[in-house]
Length: 159
Image 1 (cartoon, rainbow, N blue to C red):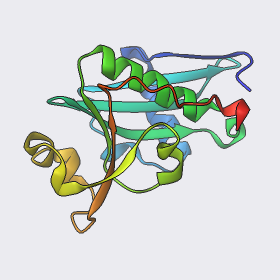
Image 2 (image 1 turned 90 degrees about the vertical axis):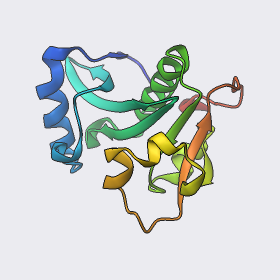
Image 3 (image 1 turned 180 degrees about the vertical axis):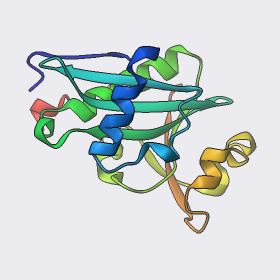
């Protein structure tokens, strides 16, 4: 349920809060390149309860990280953060969204992501630091075609 929770783009002065959130959820901010990463945040009870970051590489928006504080989970916040990030990426001209790992594959599949061979990703993305940081032995990632309007997403309260 999304009562009293707002989703919006993070502003520069909130980076410290985003870093703290990542550390609190065990994701570690050291691996995140904050320069060029666009974050959406979920604010609940005057607390940044969740965030989703994307970084553009050519025509692709690469997801990472997605985090929600434990006490705010199971409220649909992660799903709404993903949808906000996808909408912004599409509006910004990205043709594809990418999750470079298979972690939480079932979650991302509910948002239109499909399992994709890593070798099928655009050359520019395969040359990026984000791609290199992820397990080079992994054969698959997940992608979402942003050129197609998806009508399949069901709000979390309906699951």
